[in-house]
Image 1: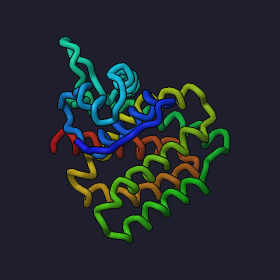
Image 2: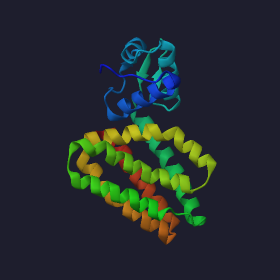
Image 3: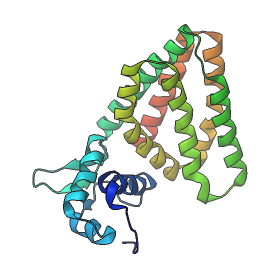
Image 4: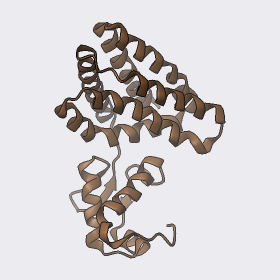
Length: 219
C-alpha cells in the first residue's frame, strides 16, 4: 500500500471512491481480489464508514461486488458478462449516434479533437501515456452520447461506462498493438455518421464492440 495519501474530510466518500476507481481502472488491483476496508481506512486516515461509502459508490458502478460473506471484491468479469456488457454498450451507442444523425447534432469538431489527441499520444511512444490514450478514446464516445441530448441514453451510459472503461484498459494491457490498430476506426465512424448511412454505422459500432468482446473472452 502507498503511504502518505491524505483526503479532505469534507469529501471523504467521493474522494476515496475517485482514488480507488483510478486504481481499479489502472489495474493496480487485480480483478477478483478482496478489498480490505481496514487497510484503506488506515492508508487514508479515515473511518471505515467513509470507506464503506466509497465502496458503495463503486458498487453502483459495477466495479466492486459484494459476496455473500460481505467481503468486497474487485469486479471480475465472466465471459458472458463481457459479451453482455459490450452488447449493451453497442445498443446504447447505436441509439445515441442515430439520434445525433437524425437531429443533426453530430459533434464532429469534438470527435476530431479527441481523435487528434489519440493520434498525438501515439506519437509519444511511451508506456506512461497508455491510460491517457484510453481516456481520450472514451471521451470520443462520451461526446456522441452527450450530443444525443437524450437523458435516458446519458443515464444508461453512466451505468455501463466505468465497467467498459475497465475492460478497455484491460484490452490495452493485453495487447497495446491491437488496441492501437483500432484507433483508425474512429475516422470511419465519423464519416459514417456524416454520411447518414445508419445501417452501416450501426454495423460498424456493433462489429467493433463484438470484436472487442471476442478478443477479451479468448485472451
